[in-house]
Amino acid sequence: MRHAPENELGVVFLFSKVSKRLGFPEIDIIQPHFPDCWAYRRTNKGVIPTWIEFEFHSHTFKSHLKDIKKIKPSKGIVVCWDHDWKECEKYVEVIDLRSHLGLGRQVWIQNTKPQYQHGFDEIPRRRTQGWTWSVAPGSRPGDLLLMYRAGLVRDARLYEVNEELLQSISHICVIKSFPMRRKDFGYGAEVAQLVILKNPLRLEQMKNDRVLKSAPFVLRNLFGRSNVTPYWYRLYDLVMKLNPYKDIEKSLKPYSPDLL
Image 1 (spheres, rainbow, N blue to C red):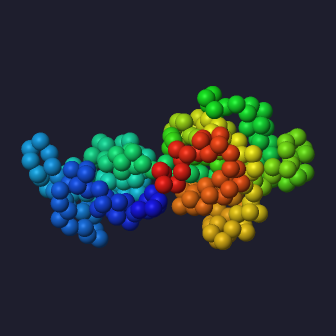
Image 2: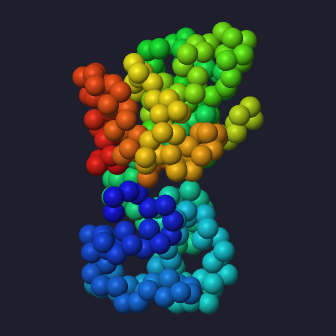
Image 3: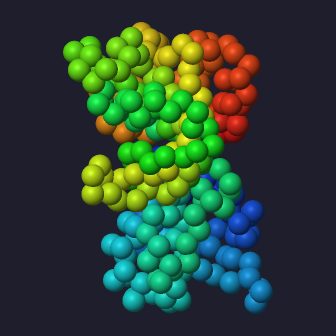
């Protein structure tokens, strides 16, 4: 797969490619009702049959809690991409493909209003010193956060931030911790600055790009917290063309699209 899974079907496809590596020498059947799959698993007691339920997020397995009472063995396996419900492990074993494969960094765009833009202007050297910032609840440590400066010129002047950087992605950060619900702004996580773009990527450039112009987050004018992982290959290309500098290239190299 070129990109990380975005839904349950993507999880099924990815599992089919790595099942032997994960200790499943043979898949018996995949079916449209619970459980999604029966497979043979290699254990200390030999190769045994087990059932598997595929989920994109592990929390959606809650809808099957009544079903596991009717099946033997009662404890099977949930194969998911995002293990976001720890309680799930009380009922089934969870195989989180994202963690097991050591893959799956995601890329998010964070829409930031002028009144908060001082946050990454006043302390430019935050490469090693993290700070708490609003993030999407589905984000995870290691994900990239593209800071988009939203707002109007009058708002920038009111809050005394750089109006020339409005409607652009000027900073790229890395998320350092799992999101936690906060009283003041929803979910927050520790983030650290990865790079400041000498030439920001502007919304107008994205709207004029042949690939990005039809992207959902561009059609929404980058409003909200969007998962833009499927479009990172194009965003990365544009960022590097605008910023052909060795320091920026070095900082972003571990996050090149072929390594996500």
